[in-house]
Length: 431
Image 1 (cartoon, rainbow, N blue to C red):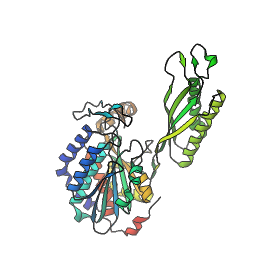
Image 2: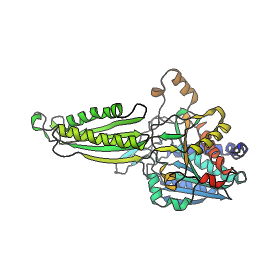
Image 3: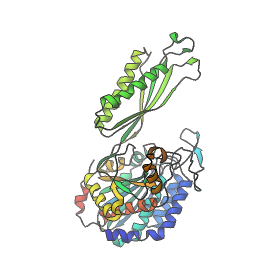
């Protein structure tokens, strides 16, 4: 990458900063749930058109793609996710969300950008505009993709089902980023697995209902569910190698409606995080094995029901691409660039480059006030004092978070767009 090109393009950030911050606050104050990102998509499309992009909207519902062609060279895709969460904001910010809406089931819910997608949108929209304003500094094609419904894990697949492949064409490299509970100002990259695969499973176990005073007449699904939960803890502890990361969390159990009534079924909802397909398959198979065995031990009158939902793919950064981006970040950010720890969170970003057979890299930027983070770290209270993504208190500091997020996208894009490397070398795509 030409560091000079990056500095030249990003010199425009001084003039764009007020608009960047204003746009971010507007997005934060007006969040939209998955598959409902209509206003956000409209604002993004208007900005891309104003910057000279050829814009397509409504992809997979509310997805937006902007493309700007600038001579021969690699085709680079930058992606941001747009949706918010059904969380009641408790940050106390003067631009905090007070939005309520109806979810997919028609139930009223509060809405908050509790995961930083507003940061992602504002940074990509600004990076796209800065690059378009300095086309003399690069050559190739830039694709800005704004994806809906990341939080429910089907937004990327929805865009693919709606023929986003035909819209974006061939892509040589794809990039994504996420704001994380790290000190603002830092950026971290990682080769190989970076985000876990995730599977949510709903299990229904069946018993026999009875009066609470007559348990001998029942097959108690509460006791059955309790035994299953205890036994499930042995999968990671005793069936997965200590060197292989895995997480199994039971997040919800529901049975019955009254203290003196034994119900006839129980619903268990759980979540699995893994970093390779073999481990994922083993854990899911073990869950089914244990549930069936416990049902048999309790004389359950029928087989349990299993439903997989909210599935997220494994995110595995391409080694060659990530090393190139890491070098570019080191040149630009200096000691603020480092290695990103393995993350247990999950994303559906990789669905798109995987479908396009395009190598990709996904990195993290910090969003926590550095002094606040340093004080918590010194006190050994990071886990308790620093709000994480999806918390009602998660609120990235405006700066330097927005500057770094914008800079990282520009620097990564220019690691390819400003390169004279043989374009065919960059087309060594991975599945």
